[in-house]
Amino acid sequence: MASPRVTTTILLLSVDEAPMLEHSLPAALAQGPDTEVVVVDNACTDATAELAHRYRARHLRLERRHTY
Image (cartoon, rainbow, N blue to C red; front, top):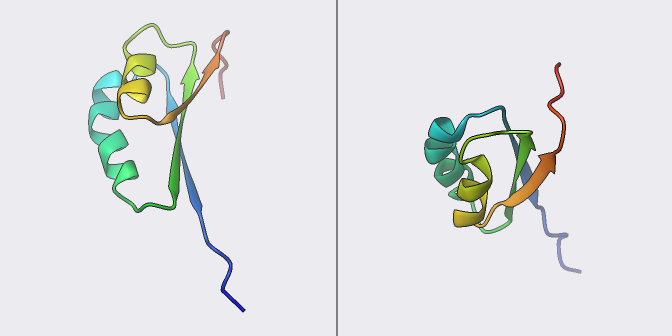
């Protein structure tokens, strides 16, 4: 019987953090082939969406900014 395949999901929350994503997206994607990277775009007005698409990360956009 084969072992179940383990996958990892990394969530990156962005509130206009495009400069930080330039570094964190490649690092997250380098974690291995079974790693899914999801960028949660908190109604960003910067290049967050563009970077998510460029690095082929999954992109979830919130239409209204939410606070924590």
